[in-house]
Image 1 (cartoon, helix red, strand yellow):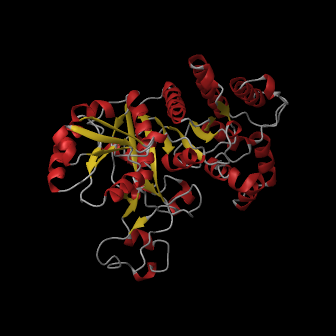
Image 2 (image 1 turned 90 degrees about the horizontal axis):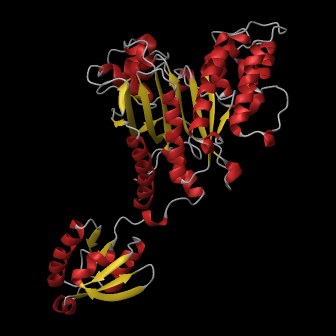
Image 3 (image 1 turned 180 degrees about the horizontal axis):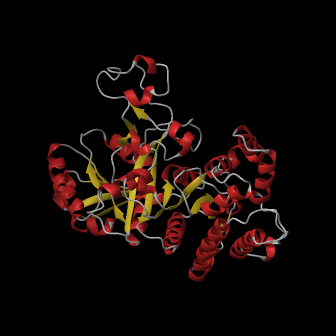
Length: 474
């Protein structure tokens, strides 16, 4: 049998895992510094927990798990060729994201947690998507959510977390903000108040299929030419020209929000004035002003994007998306590297209504690709072992075991080569493993109490007292 793995999944080498853990550890450390607590949920959930939460397209991308045993037993014969077959043969599914399982967790354990509840979760998710560069069927998400609070200060805090993580990783970034209430108002404005999800799902693909592709999809969904023309007026922000050179990101965002407000309060226009647009604009303005007061530099990294939709059904307020700032680096990476938003009643479907939450999710796999592309991984995170002890034979290796124990006690990662092979072979092993230090303790060194220490990076070799070995390496 030829060894292989399913498309859209990957093996990770030790070198890759060291780099991935660098990303996870960076995110985890920032989460913990803001008071977020870790939880984990199962890889699989009951199908009813997941279905209907991500829109029709999201539901199609959920991996269903066949029931154990004879999964066709008891299936009515008239459902064999119908879509209703799935519910008879599959009661469980792999989780599509971490947010819906988190909402289920909150309701199931509501008597054991303190609200507002701040949690983080770093686990894999699965989507039956078409594999391509930057898009996988199995990938990790690194989520942080606050649930049980309506305060917009939570959004401000999550934006601070985004800034701290990407600043630590060295990634130049832009944070794009919008609000689902604005999109709901746009849906009302074009006369389709019940079809905001269809609009959001379509415009969420604008970078993949361009504006013309979005409008074609809306046409296919039954929107009229007049509705699409009105939609175009809002989503392209056909406002008076501004001079970006004379305005920073904050000023541009505030000007755009003012334009939206003026647009819906202009009595000369012949259309209804959706209040939800004004509510969404007010919330965004509060967030922008809070960030501006907090950190002038961060406020230059935030943009208002009225076409930002994020096509998940459960968002109801602020929506967030982070991308690489390609204007500040030589990168063609256009995919989102972090995203999230406010959801007001996700727990309601599990029996706990009117509990608002907000969260963000870092895409570890895409962040990895960006760090590789921009050469941003630190050089000193590649090696997991710092010291290799050469094995000269039975007597010497027994002596080295004691040295190895002392190195471990001192917090130095070290290993003893297991076989007394040729010295060149052992040095080659250290070189391929990117182990920076090699210690040679033969019979002569055991008698003299002095050891040979070689730095494979500088090729320098010195003799030092064994008692100084730990201090020297540190």
